[in-house]
Image 1 (cartoon, helix red, strand yellow):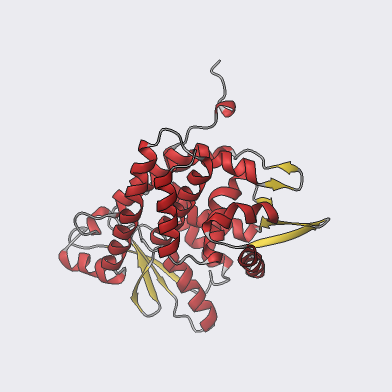
Image 2: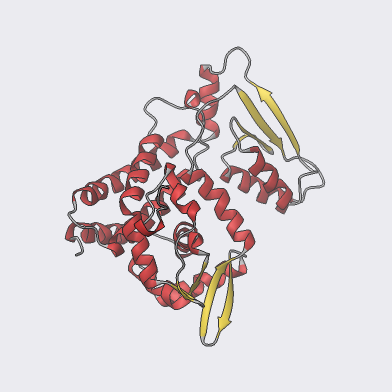
Amino acid sequence: MKSRAIHQWLEQFLTTRALRANSLIITVYGDSIAPHGGTVWLGGFIRLVEPLGLNPRMVRTSVFRLSRENWLTAEQIGRRSYYSLTPSGRRRFEHAYRRIYQSPDKSWDGQWQIIFLGAADITSEQRESVRRDLLWQGFGTLAPGVLAHPKADEESVLELLHDAGVYDKVVIMRAASVGGFVSRPLQELARDCWNLQSLSEHYHDFLAHFRPVLKMLSSAKQLDPEQCFLVRTLAMHEYRRVLLRDPLLPDLLLPPAWPGEVARQICINLYRLTHKAAEQHLMAVLETAYGPLPPAAPYFFERFGGLQPPAEAVEPVV
C-alpha cells in the first residue's frame, strides 16, 4: 500500500525542484540499471521514469542526446529499441559512483597533488575539457591552469589524462605542507579554492529535503516498491549533484560542523531502507531483449559498506 505522506512528499519535491531529464536519466542508469547488465527496453524505461515527471517525448529526446554524447548506445530488435551503456559511459559512471558508494578515506599525510595545464601544445578545447573533468575529480583551482588536491585518486587522474590524450602534455607534481599540516592560511585557501561555503549550503539543502522522508520511511509499516524506487532515485540524484562538487578534503582542512558527513549518513540510511523494495519494482517494470531483467550483480550489494542481498541470493553456510 502506498503511503499518503510519502506520496505528498514526492509531489511537493517534483513540483518545487527543477530536474534536468538528461541528468536524471544518467542517475537512473548509473544507480539502478548498470548493476542489472546496463541494457533495457526503452518502453519499460519510459514507464519506470514517468512518475519522476519525465514524459515519453522527454525520455526519447534525452536518450537520443545521451547516445550522441556516447553515454548510451541503441539497438533495434523488431519494433523495440534497447538502450545500453557504452564502455565509455560505464567508465564515467564508475568514476562518479566510486566516490558515492565507497567510504572516503579521511586520513592525510600533508601531501598535495598539483597539475599544471599550461603547456602550449594543448588546445584550448582540451585544456577546458581536462580542467572540467579534474574539477569533477575534486581538484581546486590555485591559479589559472594550476589545479591541486590533497587526496586525489591517482589512478583515476592518470586514466582521465590518458583518455583526454594529454598525459604527456601536462606536468604533475607532489608537494608537501611545511610547518605542520594545517594552518589558518591553509584552511582559508581551502575555503576559497573549493567555495566550501556554497558547498555547505547545498548539503544543508539536501538534509532539509531528505530528513523528513527518511522519518516517514522508517515509521512506515509496509514499504511500497515504486515509492522506494522513486525516493532512492531522487536521493541519489540530489546527493550525486552535491557530492560531485565536493573535493572530499581531509577533516583537518574543513570548517567545524561540516554537514557532508551527516548528509552521507542520511543517504546511506535511505539506501539501506529502500533498496530491497526498489529492486522489486525494477524487476517488475524493466525487461531486456532476452526477457526479464537479470538480478543485480554481486558488486551492487557492496555499496555503502554492504547491503543485504535478497534471500534467494544469500549463499548457505557450509
